[in-house]
Image 1: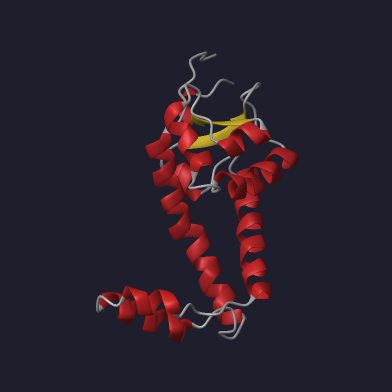
Image 2: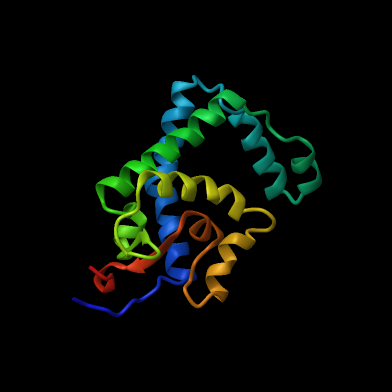
Length: 166
């Protein structure tokens, strides 16, 4: 039994999140956009705002924010939450991004798989971690155990797979 614990730090977790954006959130966003028949958000307004921003007219781009449908936004957010939790269950605490960088989420005390309550608490804790100014995520950079606010709330920790305690 390997008793060393190697906590996953800020940058590896950041990279895993970035990968998950591409592998999970982006495909779900495309599906939700098309299922909504374009009613989720005004894509034309986003394109117009990008044109304003590219032409150094940030004031105009910021003044004309596109409208979004709360219903379709909630469908997107719940879909991402459910798919993430399915990956955590299927891959024992890992999403595609975490798996690629060889890290996973485990219970803080036992270093065993997380349960559904922890998964849900951690997922909802992401919202709290973003307020204010992503401070909940930045805790990882300053804590010895590399736990973010959502880890503290859920009783979880992110470890490198090969050095996880069995």
